[in-house]
Amino acid sequence: MNPITTRQIHVDLPPVTFNVPAGADLLTVPRNSVPLSGPAAAIAAALAQPIGSPALADIIAAAAPSKPPADKTATIVVSDITRPDVPYRGEASILHPILRLLEAGGVRPDHITILVATGTHRASTPEEKQLMFGPEVVERYPIADHDATDASRLRPVGVTASGTHVDINTLYLDADIKILTGEIKPHFMAGFSGGRKAICPGLANLATLQKFHSPQFLEDTCATNLVLDGNPCHQEATEVAERVGADFLINVTMDEDKALTGVFAGHWRLAFERATASLAEAVTVPVAEPYEVIVTVDATINHYQAAKAAVGALPVLIDGGTLIQIANSSDGIGASEYVEELALLMSLPHHRDYIDLICRRSSVRKDQWEVEMWCKVLDKVGGPQGLIYCTTGIEPAALAQLPLTSGYAYTGEAELGPMVQNAIRQTLTAWQTRLGRPPRLGVVLDGAHAVPALVAEPVAV
Image 1 (spheres, rainbow, N blue to C red):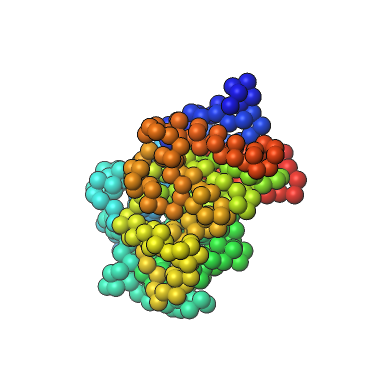
Image 2: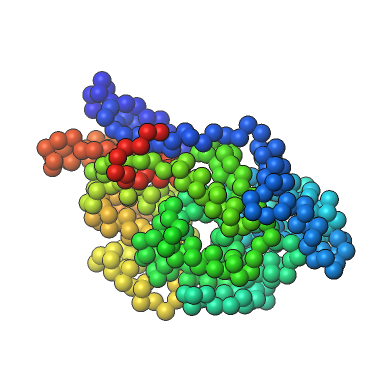
């Protein structure tokens, strides 16, 4: 590329610098959300003046009126270690003010359970609990991890409209005071994280988790980023949350630098809806015309997590376009179950055969849903040749076994910079030859936060 007609882009994670044509569009999150100047004060205000509910202190005082305060129980639902950015400690902690209000209301520390909503994920280690909550919390309050397979800690709460027999964690159901916490951000299945997802799938039984991640839900076109209306995942989670209830919710929104941009507290549904409306405006990147080539940057730890950034770019990529993913993948591919499902996909003649197979299964296997999402990427780009995966976090031999084009094919050395630069240059050249003009190129610098979307006309931001 001619340096006079190119622009240089530097990315922190994974650390890489590369050039793109000067006319490429940088698809970055609009700067219409600014970090809160005083997060602690904002959290205190949200707890005292919540959305659609009494103040948390008043809810605590009114709970279980037949019990003295010292006999009341409370359960605070928190996110697990796969969401390490939720502020549970430090100046912007959303957990510490809740704990102080509960104790000020007479609830004993040993009656306050911090319940980790693991969903399908593993339990957190003692070291991870220290990291998430800090020693002062770990030593003072009971902390439990949800286990979707432990029937002794689950209780039936009914059957949903989709036919799911739902069981929920008894530590939550039996609490006099039920509080939900978490971060709201785009979710490529449920529309948004946070809110009702703390309960379902966070605290549900395995059968419910399997339905939530089943082709019955995920093949629905409404099961995607920023969509709630008609989204079967959202509908299922909301129905379960309505059945079991919650006394209070506090969710936060954050920018790509992990700074708080909003605090939303109060009624579990109303506060969530207020937050999602605000976030959708903040993260949507308007695009007037789809691209032939998109470069997207993914900072997550493995190939499993990288599916989110890849799927997020699809709405603004032409059918049969090329997606170049610059991936961190420092922790490799993913869990053994995920690797097995990928191997199954690779053994089939076509990626659509995998979708047909999982639709015929009598039960949902762990991690098949993420492979299903990669199949959506392959649908859009026309197969593995349209997905170029650039990373040095996965060994060449292992990367070659995945449904993609390995970035190592573009370089003779295990360095990310030359790999990315060569992949971009060769892809643009191939499209130039095919079209007789330079291809349209979009670059998504934060695939985990930015949500590109086609609009009728460009929107000023």
